[in-house]
Every structure is written in structure tokens, then in C-alpha cells.
Amino acid sequence: MKNVKIVSNSPMGNYIIIFITTPDKQCAQKISLRLINDKLAACAQVNGPIESIYQWKGQLHHDKEWRIILKSKKDLFSQIEKTVVEMHPYDIPQIMATEISDGHESYLSWIDECIKSETE
Image (cartoon, rainbow, N blue to C red; front, side, top):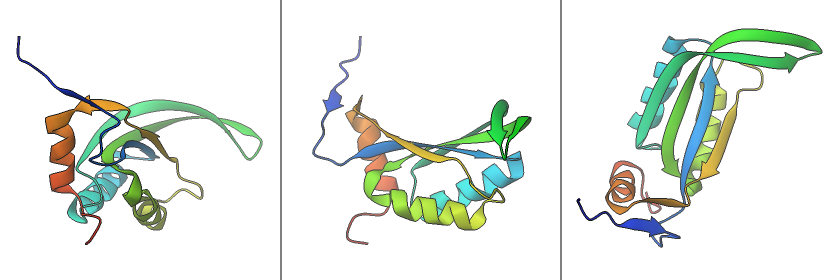
């Protein structure tokens, strides 16, 4: 078995996964491409359709949506959020992040290589 090093509380940075939902695949792809091209995220996975059931303005909704899963760093979240809000058709888009507590060191290093450095 290959020796795999797991990074915990890495000094390399605060890595995050961001979840965004969109009304259709084209919107998800457009947002994803922009975030990757702007070096705000290393990877965007687009999947769907997914089924979303939620309350909005006092009514129950049951819709098909597409989900974006981004890999990035915490210090870029505000820029990602601003870009998504500008591009997204929803009044209140879902943009939620969770910290990555552990990860394969080589993968986390790859994220660093793909996104803006803190000095850019």
C-alpha cells in the first residue's frame, strides 16, 4: 500500500469546500469557469440535477437545481462570495463553506498551486 501523508492543522493555509446551488447546469458551469479562471478556486465539481425542497416567502418549493462544489482557501471566500452574488440569478444564493480539517498533503499543495497567492 502506498504511504499517504495526511495533513492536520496544516500551516499551508485554511482550506475550504464551498457549496453553491444554481437553477441550471449552464449557470453552474458559467460561475465555475469564472472562479477557476480568476484563480479563486482550484476545482469546481458540477453535479445534478439535485432535488431541493425548501421554504421561500412562506411557500414550500420542490425544485431541481445543480450543485457546485469548490475547493479553495478561506482567505478567498469573500471574493468568491462577491463574484457568485454578482453572477447568480437568485435573490439569495446558497453560498456556504466548511473548513477542511484533514487532507492529503499533495492535494492541498495542488490547491495552493492553482489559486491566487495571498500576495497577488
